[in-house]
Image (cartoon, rainbow, N blue to C red; front, side, top):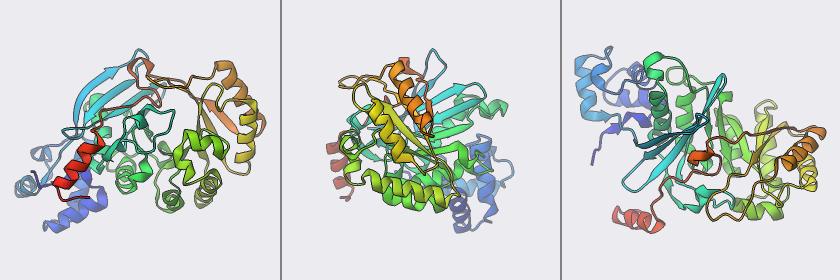
Length: 363
């Protein structure tokens, strides 16, 4: 087993601490971050401002180890999807959505998802483990490399959304460090407002984000009352809507009135009535909010159907009339199962995870 430190797991603060620990000046960490994430150089011999002795020391103490790209698909509309192997038993999926003047990368934070939202295919795959920092930021590096950024220096990824597989706030430490790199001027240099974290409502972590988070917040709401949300998003039974909205208000206040985005998947005959729309208007009053209406994307075995375009339009008009900014998200990448809620990857059974943990002396 390779016991060297994987430098892909380190944000700038950790990288500087690593170089101090091996007897080098902290600024070497900044140099290496720039080589890896800004220039795409992952061989120590290519880092020309590091001396020969330091490069030899790094080969002994460190490595730059990426997850492996298994496949790369391109949809008719230009959407791209990568299947990425993170260990012998598990793969995740990452999606790139190109638009005029904008390119959005949808990144995964866990192998599978433990929340089991009833309308999402990812949750039906089960859950195996959290991703490491390197496995999260590695998705950004792989996409940049595939899209040619390191060759022509033209930015293709302008936005990153943590809306792929998993619940980011159940892996908050790794997610924070990965987003540090996304927004670091020596790495990917994205504005904090161009990095968005989507949560189903892990309230204790949300309550700290206004101070520590370097990203914008999106909340997967999908219902305006607890009775329905308990069914669609089982996490609601632990953190019901009143507590969730209180955390959103605190987050917004801590950020000087920053807008919170609410995601609302449109399910035919389930949550798409005019009454549902009016309940949502009432629920969000007094909170700086924007609502993304997401046409449901079907997957095998689901009982749900997509609301009609007319129903979605009517729902959006009611929100707008109530003073709530609302847009309908365009469905992208359906022909390669890359649309919202369709990511599945490959997730090892829980039994394997438990056996592996026991063999390693874990719980």
